[in-house]
Figure 1 (tube, one colour):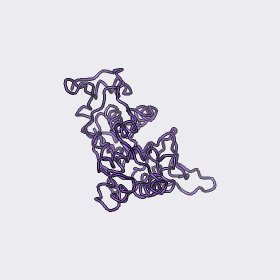
Figure 2 (cartoon, one colour):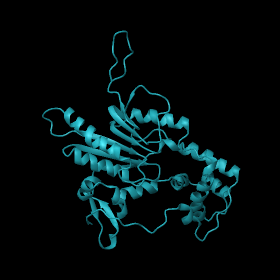
Figure 3 (cartoon, helix red, strand yellow):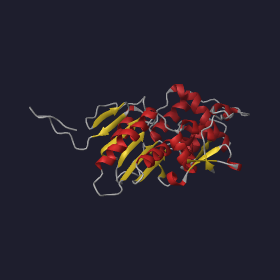
Amino acid sequence: MRRTRQTRETSGMTSDPRARATRGATIPEISDHEFALFQALIKREAGIHLALSKKPMLVCRLFRRLDALKLGSFADYYKHIIHGPDDERKRMLDAICTNETWFFRNEKHFELLRDELAPSWIGAARPGRRSRELRAWSAGCSTGEEPFSLAMVLHDALPDWSIEVLASDLSNRALALAQQATWPLEKSERIPSRYLKRYMLRGTGAQAGKMKASDRIRALVRFDRVNLNESPWPVEGAPRFEIVFCRNVLMYFSPSCRQRVLRRLLACLAPGGFLFLGDAEGLGEPDDRLLPVIPAVYRLRAEPREPAHAGAGVGA
């Protein structure tokens, strides 16, 4: 690999899962009853709510598992999941995960980190101390673009700090790709040139058309499978995070699961830490522990909010 430059190359490969799943194969029908069984199972296992309109998507994605197992119907596959090895449940969840992401998705969030939060952390650092520690969590990291975007911004803005970025996802398949830290070169188009030149290597020879994260930021990112619907999470009880990114994940959950996950995310956030959600997501129920910063970004109060009294202000 060598240092990469921005490129305008595009891929000729289709990203349509239906096209890949159906090529040269006949997909069996799924009845409304069978869909309801999978719908309940997926909600129970992952908290994900599939509306009836998602039936074609479910059929296309699960057909890959039917084909791999040489099963002739979705009823047979459901029985295989219920009575077969536990690993098949994880493979089913892998199959239904969307894994849509890109570098520096919602640039305003990364601009906030670079231009406002990092300087404030530097200013608050104790005098005489050469370095500080900062922990960030990318929950629902997909194939790694988000945690590596975080790593680039934090390493560049806080060069003397000890930084750890946890990248987690429900999908083992996505995590395996994220750990490779290698992407098609066309994905470089969304990376600011400053970071692209400093942190990405361009593939040559057999790796032509690809880019790979440099060792210096790969060392900052660690990976773990986390099903946000399960309990406990492997990160609970550990040192808390100053940053939690959980963007475009909660939108797939049922309302009750969404609120439960939000409460647990806040328990993993350090006082004064920042929660980043997707633009189409909200808190659902109001929470006076959270202060809005910019759209979809919230700060956890550094101290519990005191009851208001006559003549007394209420601080953050």
